[in-house]
Image (cartoon, rainbow over all chains, first blue to last red; front, side, top):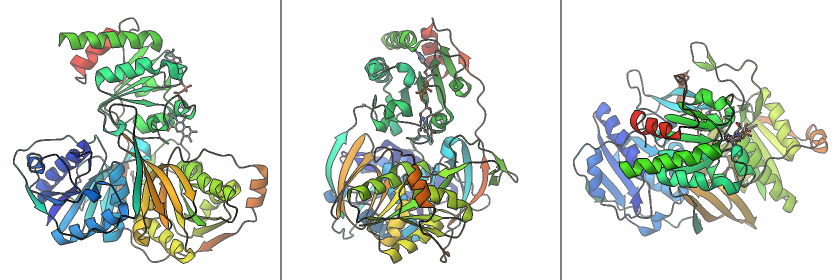
Length: 321
Length: 247
Ligand SMILES: Cc1cc2nc3c(=O)[nH]c(=O)nc-3n(C[C@H](O)[C@H](O)[C@H](O)COP(=O)(O)OP(=O)(O)OC[C@H]3O[C@@H](n4cnc5c(N)ncnc54)[C@H](O)[C@@H]3O)c2cc1C
C-alpha cells in the first residue's frame, strides 16, 4: 500500500507542479503511515533519484520515448495497470493540463473517487475529506471520497514544495505500451516566458490599457519580475492578446502568489478566476473600481504614469539588492 | 457524422455564492440558471458550425437533470441542436453523470462526444475524461481549435506554455474551451423551432457516486486594501519587497 504521485514532464524536465504534487503526496503518506512513490511515463534528462529529496522512496518509470507525447487513452490504461500492480491507495496528480486529461479517466477505469482542484491535505479525522476550490474560486467544497482507492488532483500553486532529504531508487516498469490513438502533428510555444498556470507572479492588463500597442510596459514589468502575462476577457476577445492569456471564470483560473491587475475593473467573472491569488495589487484610475475591494495593495492612478514608475523602482531594487 | 453534446445547468456567472442548511447546500433561491458557458459557447456552437458545413451531420444534446433543466435544453435546441435527451435524475457526482452519458452515447453510437472544459460551479473538469474512459475511446482535452475532415479531426489543445495539435480519428471525446468557437445568440426562427424539436426523457441507469459533498465554505474576507499614492510607485515596490516579501 502506498501513495503514488504522477510525475508530469515536458522537454526532458519534471514539471514544477509535479514537485508540488510530490510534496503533497509525501505529507499525505506521513499522515497515513504509508510510503510515497512516483510514476513517470516516458523519458527525462532530470536525475530521478534526486526526487528522493522531496520524500519519494521509489520512482517507477516506463522509459519509452514514444510516451513523451500524451495519449490519454493509452496513459489511462497504463496507469490503471500500474496502480493495481503496485497496490497504490491514493494517487496524486497536479490539476494541470495533463492531470485534467488523465485523472478523470483513471477514476472511471478504477472506479476510484476523484477530487480535482484540491487545495489542502485531506481531513482524515472522519473519513477522507478533501477541500477543493468551487464556483471558480468563489468558494470551497469539502468532498468525501468513498472508495478504497482515491485520486486527488492538486491545484497548481496551492501547496508548497518542501525538501525532506533522501534519495529515491528508480525502478523500470515492463508493461507493453500500444499504438497511440492520438498523433501529435505540431506544437507551438506561447509568447510569454513563464507559463501562466505555473507562474508565481502574474502581471495582467485590461481594457484600461486602450490597445495592444500599449502592452510593452506590461511585458517589461513581467520580464523584470519573472512573471507571466495575463489579460481580461474583452482584451482577448478583441484579439489584443492571445486567448490563452484570458483569466477569469470563463478563462484560465490562476492562484499565483502575486497578481498585479492593471486597468481591469474587477468584474465578478474576472475576480472568480484570480481571487485565490495570495496577494492582489490593483492599479486603476477609478477609485470606485470594484477590484479595490478584493485587493491587498492598490494605486489609484493612470496606468500610463504609474506602471513606468513601478518599472523604474523595480530596476532600482534589482540594482541595489 | 453523429454528435452528442453534453450540457450542464449552472448558476449565472453573476450569482452571489451562498450556502444554507449549515453550509451543506448551495443556496439556489433566486438563482438564474444558464447553460454552462463552456458547453454552450464552445462545445455546442462548434458542433453546430460543423453541421452547417455538412448538413448530413446530426447533433444530439444530452443533459442529466430533472425537468428544471428543460429551459436550458430548449435554449440549446434554439441555437441549433436537432434533438435532445434528458436523463431524468439529479446528478450525484461526476462519475455518476459520466456513467449516464456514456450509456446514452453507447446506445446512440455517436462519432464525437463534445463536452465543455469544466462547469463553472463545481469546476471538476472530469465528466469528459470519464466518458472517454467508460467508452474506451480517445480523449482530447482543453481544445482551443477543432477541425474535422471526414473521420479525422485536427484538434489544437492547450499545454503548459503553448499549444499542441493532435490528429485523432472518430470515435472520440473532446472537451472544449475558448478559441474553438464564439458565443452565439439564438434567433427568432431558432427559438420557435426549438419548441417542437424532440426532447426525449429517459430514466437513469444504475451507477455509483464515488464522492459526496460534505460541506462548503467561503474564503476569508480580505483585510482591506492598502493604498499607495500615485506619485510614489516606489513605495508600492518597497511594500511588495519588504512587507509582502514577494519580489
Ligand atoms: C458569462 C460571462 C463570463 C465572463 N467571463 C469573464 C472572464 O472569464 N474573465 C474576464 O476578465 N471577464 C469575463 N467576463 C466579462 C466581465 O463581466 C467584464 O466585462 C470584464 O472583466 C471587463 O474587463 P476589463 O476590466 O478589462 O474592462 P472594463 O470593465 O472596461 O474596465 C477597464 C478598467 O480600466 C480602468 N482604466 C481605464 N483607463 C485607465 C488608465 N489609463 N489607467 C488605469 N486604469 C484605467 C477603468 O477605470 C476600468 O475600471 C464575463 C462576462 C460574462 C457575462
